[in-house]
Length: 64
Image (cartoon, rainbow, N blue to C red; front, side):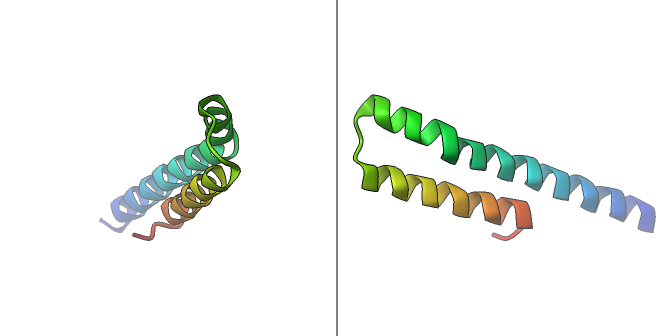
C-alpha cells in the first residue's frame, strides 16, 4: 500500500513539473512573440510573463 502511494505522489509531482515547464516556455517564448504580433505594450507583456512564471512556480511546487 505504501509503494502505491509513493508511485502516485511521484506521478503527481511529474505532472506538476511538466505543467510548470510548459508555462515557463510559454512565458519566455510564446507570450513575447504573440504580444509583438498583436502590438501589445511592453508593460502588458511583462505582466503576462510574470503571471505565467508565478503559475509555473506554483504548478511545479504543487501549491494552489
